[in-house]
Image (cartoon, rainbow over all chains, first blue to last red; front, side, top):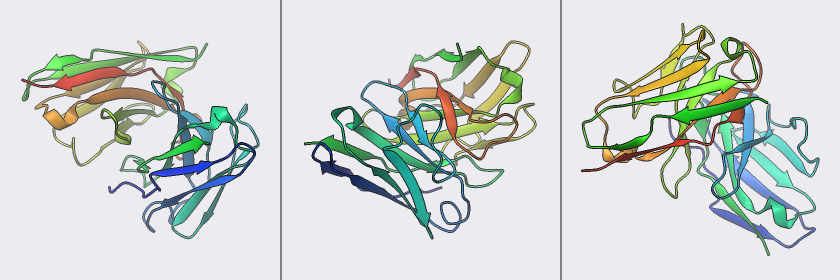
Length: 111
Length: 122
């Protein structure tokens, strides 16, 4: 049950795009299409931004997109805005008898 | 309004016990898998435990297995986490969260409470 690996931080200027990687194994990210992404602002609960690798819940901006290749998933934020500054966590389903696994988290800074 | 409200956190000595509760409202509680996720101060999210809609299936992180027990009372729309033999490393904000869709638990967690704080210290 090791955490998925994410970069500690990424940054970009308003309007730019940033991509956050999420590296796992064939037992989690690589083994299932059930990767999700969460946004967490300071002092707030996490918010689901992407599920099933690339699907946005209703109400989430289309500036957020997800993808996966092998054991690595990615979240891309296009047209970066000040409100996107937050921590982002990936997560993967790991099987019926084990809990989800989360990533180490990435702080996105808007310069 | 769909809502989850946690309670039961507090300060406890190492080796002690706490019982966390999570009250769900605004949705059919018995139709959803439910989860506990914790976040230590300044740290990331960690999945603690999850439970099937009818309580028949549960799973735990290795770090809490044998010490924590998840359960639910669907008649009262309540999720429970019984925490025994608490350690300093269990200190965290504990969130309860709901699976995105009814009856399946693959897709992620779409409703979260605001969390309840557990501090384990002498």
